[in-house]
Image 1 (tube, rainbow, N blue to C red):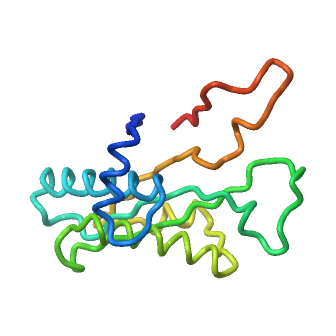
Image 2 (image 1 turned 30 degrees about the vertical axis):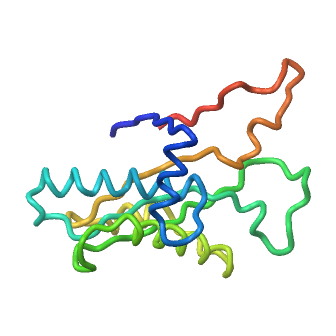
Length: 160
């Protein structure tokens, strides 16, 4: 397992947004960019033939998506991992398509009651023709709103 921290400035994110066909969030734009780069690198390393499916897992905050809405004072982190898939058989690798796949996977959870997948079952069903990229983003998560009387955090980190 490898973990990296990437920091994108505002002008880079705006450039990514300009390349997307639809209105996109900062997180969607950056995740699609990183996912595209990882897929391209893996295809080059594996001579384009052994891996057939590429998956990105994205954490989303369910607090704003539950019905009825949770009270503001609800304790704990309530997240769900959504997956977006790109299969080699779908055609050439395309940033715009990856953005749309990410957006659709998030919208699917928002529109419907979310389907909680058992992590162990998901890992067991992964095969040699599939690669999963895990991602995190702390954008819009309320970590920086917490004050334990020694001040608000300057930087919060999830460990890989």
